[in-house]
Image 1: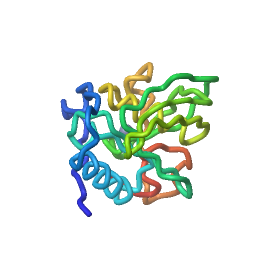
Image 2: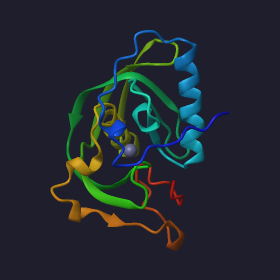
Image 3: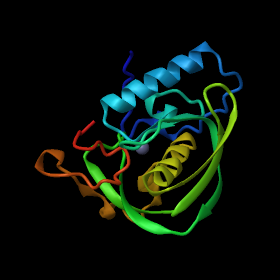
Length: 174
Ligand code: ZN
């Protein structure tokens, strides 16, 4: 098990567009394992390789009591509906904002064996898919706000997190 340091804004590496993975080799497998460990340790719902300084199109998503998704070269192929929901990010600890996201998201990707997988998600997983694919393009959720005034501080030690706060850390300030 290896924990990777999570980059925080304004680290410029968060703004790089990640490259497509060409070969799923042992280094990609190790990256995935370390990203899963890092996500668990930070109590996050998702993590993109961009956030650990690796500019490759890999992300992991795991909602509480849900299934782990390992997505290589993920692409969102369809979005349906719209909603505004609270969102946070491990790369901007201590803050959240209400972000406009789709209600249903369909994506395709490769799994860790290189097999093509299609995911249709709503709720937290749909939100995480949009959030993590954004990271791979160098986009942070704050870019989707009309104004940074929409950010509000969260103090995890003082109360419960909204359930659907992506990466906000379910009580942790990672
Ligand atoms: Zn994030």
